[in-house]
Image (cartoon, rainbow, N blue to C red; front, side, top):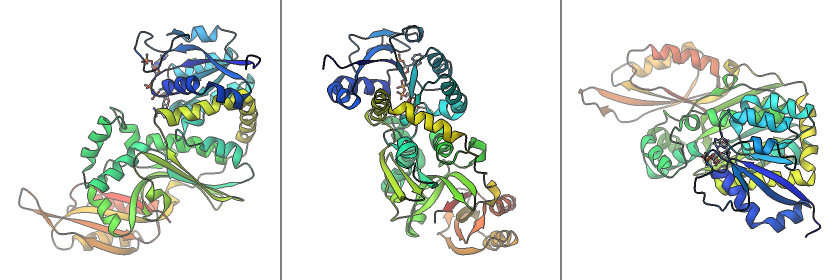
Length: 436
Ligand SMILES: NC(=O)c1ccc[n+]([C@@H]2O[C@H](COP(=O)([O-])OP(=O)(O)OC[C@H]3O[C@@H](n4cnc5c(N)ncnc54)[C@H](OP(=O)(O)O)[C@@H]3O)[C@@H](O)[C@H]2O)c1
C-alpha cells in the first residue's frame, strides 16, 4: 500500500456527522483505499472549540479553529464541510472553492439558499461540490438522481424526508400519545432539535424537496412556491380516525409532473395503510422516484443520525478520490441549464381531502359547513361525527370529519375562509390531502 497515492482531506466541523466521518476514515482506511485507488488521509480538523473533548481521537491531525489553515494549505485537495447554518458556511465554502479546494457538504440549508451561486462558482473555477448527505442522510438519493437514473425522465418524487416528524406521527399513533408528549420524548432522545420548528413545520422537508426538484426537474422552487403545512396541529384523534378509514398520516413531500407542470407540496397526507410510505415508521425516511424507463424505485432507511450520514459523506470522499464525483458534477451543471418545467399554480392542485373541524354541539352546524362546501363546488364523500365532548363551561363540542371528492386547493382555501367565519367553530381546522 505504500505506493498508493494519497488524497489529503480537511474536516471542518467535528460534531455529530464530522466525528462519524473520522470514525469511518479511521476504521475502514484500507477498504476505502482499495475502493478509491488513493489513500484518504485526514490532515486538518477545524472546529469551533478545539479544546472540547471529542468522542473520537483527533491525535495526529492538525486541530484548529480557523478555516484559514485549510485555505492556505496547498496539500489539501478536498474539504469536508459539516457545520450547520448559513454563515460562516457560505463564506467558508466560497473561500475553499476559490482556494482551489473541492468541497463535500451535508448542509441542506446552505444548498437550498445558496446552491445556485455555489454551483455556478464551482463550475467557473472547475471545482466540484458533493452533497449526498444533504438530503435524506444515509439514503443515496442524490446519486440515484444524478447517476443511476440518468436514462430516465423523472416523473415524480414522493417521500418522507423528515425523520423527526415521522417519529412523532408514528409514536403518537402507536402509543396513543399527544403531539406534545411525543415531541418532549423526541427532544430527550436527541431526534428533535431544542428548537424543532423547522422539522415540524415542514421547512426542513421542503428545503430537501427543493434541492431534489432542482436536480430531477431542473426547476428552482423557493419555499413559498411549495404548498407547505406542518404537523403541529395534528391531533391523536386525526391519526385514529384516519386509521379507521384505512390510512396513516405522513408528512409527505411530493414533486410531480402533471400535464407538463410541476406540482410541489409538503403536507401531512393520508396515505393508504398498505403503501410503503405508510409502513415507514419511526425516524426513517423513504423516497419513491418514478422514472420513465425504470418505473418506480424506492429507497428507504436512516435519513439522519451520525453513522448513516457519515456513510454518505465518506461515499462522497471515495467518489471524489476516484474522479467520478467531478464527472457527475459537470453533468449536473449541464443538466441545470435545462429549460425549467413551469410550476402548477398552488390553487390548481387537485386532490381528495380530509377535513376536520371542532364545532359547537348545536343544530345546523353540519348543515352550515356542508353549505359552505357546496357553494364552493366541493363535493362530500363521507361525514363522521364523534361523540360530543363536554367542556368545563358546560357547552359541548363535536369533532366533525369530512372526506371530500377530488377538488382544488383554491376551492378548499376559499371554503376554509368562509368556514373560519362561522361562529360555531371551536379550535383548529385541519385539512389534509389524501394520496392517490
Ligand atoms: N446530524 C445529522 O443527523 C445530520 C444529517 C444530515 C445532514 N446534517 C447536516 O450536517 C451538518 C452538521 O450537522 P451536525 O449534526 O454534525 O452538527 P453539530 O453536531 O452541531 O456539529 C457542528 C460542528 O461544527 C463545528 N462548528 C460550529 N461552528 C463552527 C465554525 N464557525 N467554524 C468551525 N467549526 C464550527 C462545531 O464545533 P464544536 O464541536 O467545537 O462546537 C461542531 O464540531 C449540518 O449542516 C446538518 O444539517 C446532519
